[in-house]
Length: 141
Image (cartoon, rainbow, N blue to C red):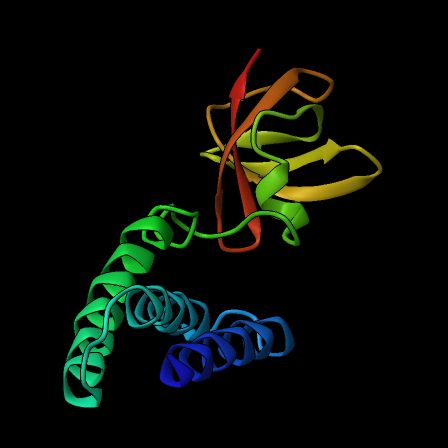
């Protein structure tokens, strides 16, 4: 019975450590320790069985954690939150220097950008469809 409470304490300490160091897998080990505590309190099992049970539940909970976190945005391509250039895609602007032979300048918002796209006269409306180094790829609107 005393071992069950020690497992519960260990589980709470591990979950508390996750609060202090977010992004680490201690949450899942804490859940495994709490599961071991529940079984140790309910059933009279030896320390060896408790350790084996903790190892098994730790493995299962870490796999469950991996399944939860694998699709939380880490594999969805480059982040655009702090990249103002990437947020420009879809913006509307106008040609400030004619686009000839695929190169010219456009004004998007309050800035002029090098542009790549079809030949267009100054003043033509364009939409940003992508980025290419320091230039924006545009299309006529």
